[in-house]
Image 1: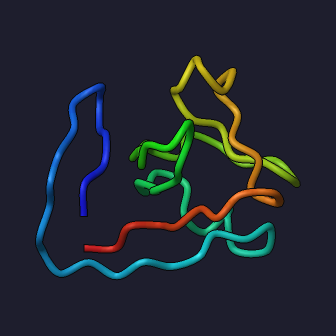
Image 2: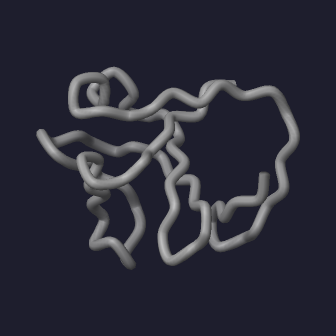
Amino acid sequence: MVYKKNDTVISKSMNMELIRLTQQNAVEYIGYEILFKSRGIHIVKKILGVTNTSVKINHSDLHNQLQIVSRKVYVLIE
C-alpha cells in the first residue's frame, strides 16, 4: 500500500488492522492515526478531536475537518 504521511509518500508493508471509522466509534479512536483518500492520494493523519459528523485533523486542504459520514475512513491499528 502506498500513502501520504506528512507530505511524504510512503510504501508500508507491515501487518496492520484497518477498522472503519463511524459516527458511533470515532470517539474511541482519538489520538489514533486514520487512513483516508483525498484528491486520489491515500493520506494518514492523527485524530485530534471528534464531532457528530467529522473528525478534527491537521490538514489545511480539508480545513482541518474530515467528514466521516461521506467518506471511507479507516483507523490504523498496529
